[in-house]
Image (tube, rainbow, N blue to C red; front, side):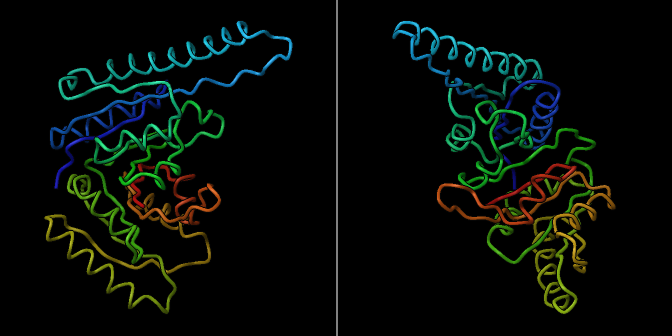
Length: 277
């Protein structure tokens, strides 16, 4: 029950600084390896019909230079933040499409630490966690833009649903749940399903207990609001620093169609969010 390697995506600014610091603090729980990654895809220039081949080549070269500069700045930030953890850290930055490269490089890590998708920021510069979640064979830890508290030493909420995605999420989260101050295991359900749901969450609580993780289990009555909002409200009421949930969705016509709970948590969770598909 330990993480051996984490991958953290690095762009620029205070959000990335906090994300790298968080990845190092989680890695320190088990002296895990930290892989820093940044990618940038050169923006396709608008082609002037009067531009000659040489001019077009210069434009493409300029945009590639800009992308390489983005990656270099991210590397400098990563190396500065890891500080004393540098001996157990490495850098993997390159020109390319961020989401694709995160999925590719996750072969070397247990989990990816990513920032929340920013609709203003270009997907050519930062990965979309939903894309990574659906394409990768690993769990992701999504860090909100403002990090009021981390997942270590704070309460955690496991939002249960009886499916393989939730099972995989709980298994991936075990090392972090073990470092939580307490674990609340909940299932949001209709009143008539409460008895069955209670049996399910009790089972998962026993499973966690056999891993040395004490968890309280309870059901939460659905009140007609989106279940993601009820999960978030429960987490806030209990001072949680982490929400663990299955990531639901499927691919259709090359577009990721996310389940409502997953979409809501990815968009609005105010605390760290661990998902697995």
